[in-house]
Length: 311
Image (cartoon, rainbow, N blue to C red; front, side):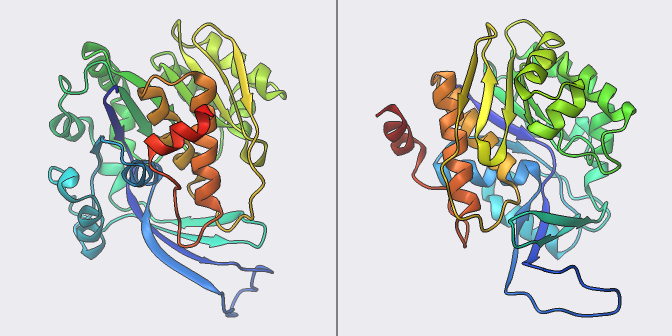
């Protein structure tokens, strides 16, 4: 199996809900559910790998408060080298709605201080040689994002394939954010975006056409994945051949981090050199399990899941 790593945003998620209707200013409502958990694109993917029994490395930072200590404890030995910034940890409050969607309120916190020098000090490029690195949360990790060219150079020097999931920009998909992302994708070997992001980035309304447009601007042999929520996922392989899988019908409880969990399942299968369609099925299965369980579950260990998918 190829080595795996994730680089990006790990923060605190406080989930409350469901809330319906949205309360008026100055009022209070009671909700049925609350959960304090590790979050962030990188954090969600890493937790899924843990549950699936997948070995990986993770580069992240935390704030200098009790939340920072708690985040590091959640990852044990893997977080030993995480830098502690001189600021409080990033906190994201997610309000869920009855249809499974959500609204976030997020503080800046420690994430903008995360730097490439910190990443390089945490990851062993030689140990990751030939592997896959998931780069996540681009629009929250300001210092690292400014050094993406240096990160891509480091990854290329160690023959590490970069998979990119930027997450949703705080100010939306402005033209500046769209062009920045397309430039990053020129250095990436795998794009992992949802349907709205893919069509917005390319200006193409059809997700399959949008995926082909993204692939045209990426290195030869790149893989493009479009996450389609309840409609499953589609992908273009290294040669441009398309694959699509449907999602099982599930009772949705909480969609927070669904795309990140999909990333974990998909990349784990890709690292195990599974066929691309099987990689899609793995990502969809793991994400479907996660969004339909409370407390959250990720299903079977990866080896058992592969056996199911092969049948």
